[in-house]
Every structure is written in structure tokens, then in C-alpha cells.
Amino acid sequence: MSTQSSKNSQNNKSSPNSKSNSNKLTLVDEIIDNASALPLEYQDCILEIAKGMAFTRKHLSKQQEETSEQRTA
Image (cartoon, rainbow, N blue to C red):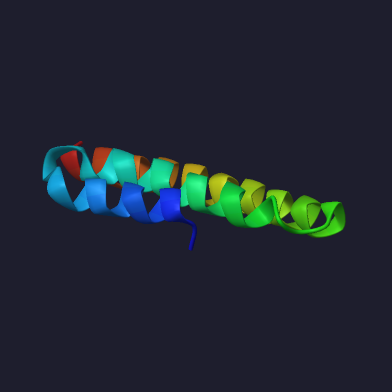
């Protein structure tokens, strides 16, 4: 883990109100820091994995919203 990522992790622990938003940024920063040291072919693979994760999150969130709407209706 890089020094900046470590500092970001420590900052997240001290501010619980912004924890979820900060964790997202810290994770992204950590991925970028570590991926920048890899060859381009691997960076491309990591980008595709990140896109897949974003796609999955989007659709799971959408499905969860639809389920909660059905319960309230």
C-alpha cells in the first residue's frame, strides 16, 4: 500500500460521518496507485474489472430500490 493511501485510510478513521464516501475515494486512489506500476496490458484488465464492478453495483442498487418500492406499495 502506498504512503498516500495509508494517510487516506487514517483520515477515514478519524471522520466517521464521511466514511462511506471517503472509503470509495481511498479505494479508487489505492487501485490507481498500485495499477500505475503495472504494464499497460494489466492496467487495461484492471479497468475492465472496475467497469464490471460498477455495472454490478448499479444493477444491484436498482434491483434493491425496486424491491423496496414493491414492499411499500
